[in-house]
Image (tube, rainbow, N blue to C red; front, side, top):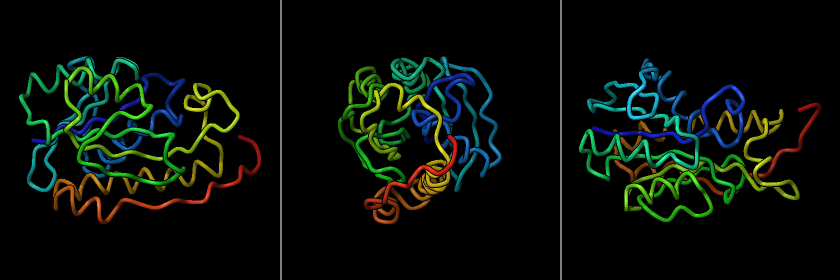
Length: 197
């Protein structure tokens, strides 16, 4: 069984923001496999399905980003899933917008949601998919990550969300090494904002 967790913030206010890339990727993956992520358990919206012969549990913590680990700790303890069968998807300001990085393990970097997950699970030895959202530039980083995505960025990030969802399939079907080789991308040119946000 795989636990696939997308990190984000609940509520309409945060729905289409950069900080909700984890939720958006999970929604895309769920839609592709006909899985409804609507049952509330362990302080998360969850949904179950079968992908490539493997049972999957999709998890969207509803604790708000900075407490994401509390929900995932409950999930992992309840299902007793091996840590290498946990895949966490989240946004990353340290990556160029539209880029994708899959890793077997590693630190949280500057991401508070991942800091919470690692602290609560007491390990960083689990796979993760990082969706690049680019840097805030001169803007306040909190406003940047929770702000709405503009036209040019929206198209690029929408494509990246679809690719990230495909990469989850690849991890389940072919293993993380294959997924890393196939989906880890280089730098992408940051799009210019055109028109109104």
